[in-house]
Structures are given as C-alpha cells and as structure tokens.
Length: 176
Image 1 (tube, rainbow, N blue to C red):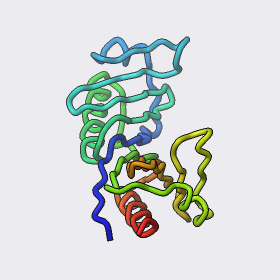
Image 2: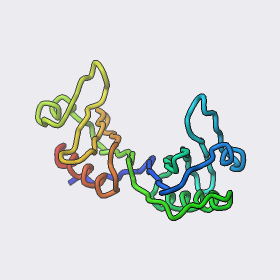
Image 3: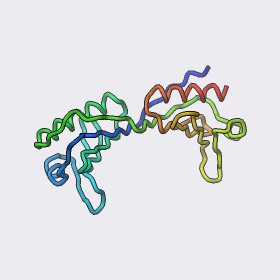
C-alpha cells in the first residue's frame, strides 16, 4: 500500500451560542479586525491573528469559524471569541460546536489514469472538457476527492481526520 500523507488546509465549523442575540454594530465597533456592512453581508466578518481564524458572526447567535488548519486551533480561537463576547457584555454560555467541512490536500506520488478510474468506478465523475480533475465520491459519506493526473488530490466534505484518512486509504487501494 502506498504511504500517503495528507495536510488539512481549512476547517469550517458552526458555533451556536444558544439563547443569544448579538448586537452586530456593538461587536463590529469593539472588536479589532471586525467589519460589518449589512448592505454587503448580513453578519460581522471578524479576523483574528492569534490564533489565526476568521469568523462570520450573525445576530441569531450563530457563528461560522473558518480558516484554521486543526480542530485544536479552532477550539482555541472559539474560546477566545467567547471570552471577547463576554467582555462586551453578551451573556454567552459554552457554545455548541460542530465541524461542517474539512478540506485537505494529498500527494499520492504517482500519476493517476483518470480515464481508467472513471471507467471502473461508478462513484467517479470525469468530464475533462469541463474540469481537469476527476471527482471521486466516497460511498456512504459526504466526502469527495478531486483527483488530478499528476497524483495530487483535494479532499472536501470530511467532518473528521478519520474520514480523510479512510478516503486516502481507499484511493490508494483503487490506484494499486
């Protein structure tokens, strides 16, 4: 079996502050790095540098956290946001956090015969005139891999690193 390492490039999480309503003007004017332009986007866009993460904060108490490369960094960033919101006077409790999407890249260190993969696997879509990569959907999951001739791939839709690893292993089996 081919030894393939993957690298997580981005994680998107939903953060729910139950029973909370946010004054977006107050948040935007008191958090350094926050922008609020309701005519362009209905939430506050907040970027922080330590740890590096971006947030989309909505009046409903719902928040999206994106741009981190690990769950641990995301949790630390969410903890920091929670403390800042408390510091602004919002009555927020520990939020419910759920991973929505993990994006990872992997190099299989060999070329893919995308035509052969497309012919032999019903969960593969390949239309080179539309997109240069093959879409390989993992069965019974929301995970998909974009495979490119050079042997590179992008994984989308995973909710855990275990799902990414399972997908990488499955593709490694397919190409053997």
